[in-house]
Structure formats: structure tokens, C-alpha cells
Image (cartoon, rainbow, N blue to C red; front, side):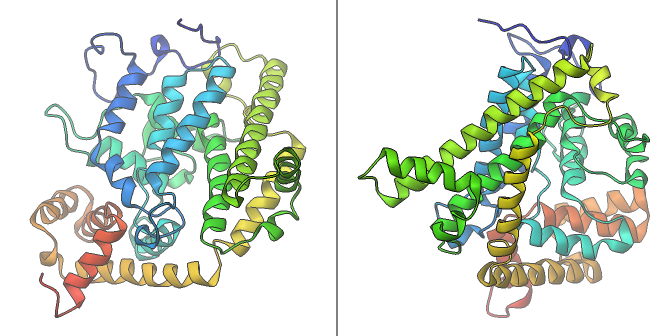
Length: 388
């Protein structure tokens, strides 16, 4: 059964379209389904399977990667979108594309590449995701990139400075507004469900890696209430089942809270269409105040005790060194790049200038690497015993 969309949802009939006009999709696909399908078939999407979420890929087969994280964000986002009568296809497309621009080694890789790019415009993974779908994917004979709709591209950008926004055109216009305006409700869902996914699943991975403990987590209301409930309901579960059921219930409570709170926000503001949503000053897809506080307590705990655990910091230290040394060697000796990357250097130098173009091409090449490719490339360049 086809569900009617709310008037404030993103409707394909009122889409701002694509950078390059195309005939409508054949068969029964919508424009936003076409976007989703192009993202799933993109090379950058497949690479997410071997990119770090928290733990580097070779540290264990069961830890989340950027790919599994993106799928989890998509699943949670679709649930919220359906409940709020919003466009599920657009929500899914944004969720699946939101991490395409991540470097190898997660945030450590991004921080290192941003430091390397400080004199050349910086590096930010949301903008790199947009760059991938607009320019870097090479699959179609008629255009560079994936030629996605405005609405999907708008949702990909979470953060942007006014200086960066000026070069991106209408898709980043909200970052030039004062006060800053909001993206579509579908984009707001994807952004918040990203936080729900990584908070809860990083707890799972952190427990699996034994870097955090259940005793520590029980100090936090959101975890404690569900953990206690599970223990009371079941007397013979394995510890792994207890953790799974606790996290499942945490996610469920947060999703229901988002739906209830956002529904009330939307009812209070009564936006007539998606453009009215874009003119609001604050997001309408939100947690309640109490849920937000519980969410932030866990987020801050994970920041201190998991993301900065000494074992994670040691890996991040090595990861940053790999990224910085790759960047430095390719900037000083671009002839060491593979031939297709050298072609990109020439193209971007003609477009952006010699040094900036070279730096951006090198950043594109490094950002596209998986964890294991970056490690292997570093060995090929710096280890004399490794074949080039």
C-alpha cells in the first residue's frame, strides 16, 4: 500500500532537481529511489566496508565499519520517517550517503588530513561526501559524479562554514542565512538517527572489545533502566544476549521519543511545505529535553572512556602518522601517485591552481583509501622490503 506523504515532506514533484537534467527514472522508481540506488552501486559506498567506525578493520571481524553503521542509520531513519509520514526513500538515500567522504581510520584520519590541508582549504568529511557524489564518482558517460537530486545533496551536508558555502551554490545556502536555516525533515531525521546509531552501537563494540564495562554503563540512567529490566525479565540469558537486548530497548526508546517529540514540534509549528521547514530556525526532529540529557551523558562517557581509551589512542596515533606521511610524500613527489591519480592532479591544478589543485587531488586519493589499503600503501612507500 502506498502511504500518503505529509504536505511538509519532500515530494519529488516539487524537487529542485539535479545539477544536470535527466529523463525521469523508468519503471516504478521515484527520483529519490534512483538516488538511493546510485549511492548503493557507487564505488565509495563499497569502500565503507573496510573503513573504521571506532576500531580499525583488522582489529576484529565483528566490530562496526562505516558500511554497517550506514545501514543501521538507514534502518533507524526509515522507521522515524514512516511514522512521521515523511519521504522514506529520500531519508534512506541521505542516510546511506552521509559517510561516503570519511577517510580511512575514522575521525583520526579526518583530523590528520584536515591538518595537512589547512593551507589548501581544509578537509571535512561531509563536504567530501558531497564532492564524491557531485564530482569524484566516475560511472556515467553523461556526467561526473552521481548527479543526485538537490534534496539528497542538501541532506548530506551537516556542517559548513560560510566561506565554504559560498562555493557550493544553492545546496549550501542555509549556511549563509542569519539565523541559519534548517534542511528538510528527512535530512534532520538522518542526522539525529546517526547519533542514535553510533552511540548505542559503539557501546556494543566497546563492551565487545572490553574497553568499557557494564558496571561503568550502569551509572547512566538510559542504560541502567533497560539493563535492570532485562535482568528482571530473564534469568538465564548469556551476557551477550543481555547486552543485545538492553541496547535494542535503548534504541527503541530513543526512536519512540524522537517520533513523539518531533510530532509535537511539527504540530506546533504547522509548516505548510518543505520550504517552510527550511525557513525554521531550530530543528523540528529532536529528542525531548530529558532524553537529550541522557543521550549526551552517554555520548560524553564514550568520548572519554572509549574514543580516548589508551588502546584506541595508540591506534589513532599510528593512523594519523600514516595519513600525514602519505600526504607529505605525495605532495613532494606526485609522480609516486598511481597514473589515474596523476591525471586528477593535472585536472585539478588546471581548475584550482598548481598547489591547491595538487593538494586537493592528493587529499581525494588518500580519503578514498580503506584502512588496509592505506596501511599497505604506506608500507609500499616506506618499507624497503615491500614491493612497490
